[in-house]
Image 1: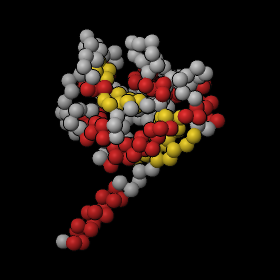
Image 2 (image 1 turned 180 degrees about the vertical axis):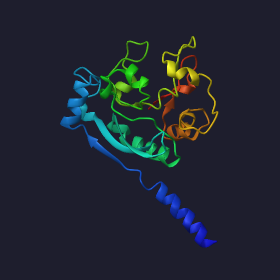
Image 3 (image 1 turned 135 degrees about the vertical axis):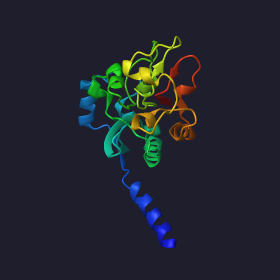
Length: 211
């Protein structure tokens, strides 16, 4: 029996031993990508020296390990690394993790690609004020499965229409990516002090977490 317990424990350790995340200052190469990709420019509320680039491991929709990248504010970089490690450990699937610069700074295009991202120097949806993303203190997670729903109930992205009803139906990766109030993934963010757009009254932004 002890051998069985040891084998199971050892197997679990191996299963979760592949997570890796490294935090970097914004390098000249990343700066070039951000400027060319229209996600940062002069006049943005946060200078590049206050941002951090993170390369990390995540589980994709095929159940395999993949390498992702994300940019956040330096004040939350270490806890973001911890949050994604915990998401990895519970097997939470992420479709894609690329810089929004790869989508020309377009929030629309990033969402259409079902991309998970953070920093983007832009105004908040329907507002003239800077978004929390402009400060590197907001993360959009699996944006197609977790849509923004307006007060009138409108969903802009056609692929998100099937996720209007917030419920888990099966065990597919896309279904597991849906964020519900009592899900472990949501609790992980909240444990670290992040607020969830799914708790908003009126407007719902199920993909959105902010600090």
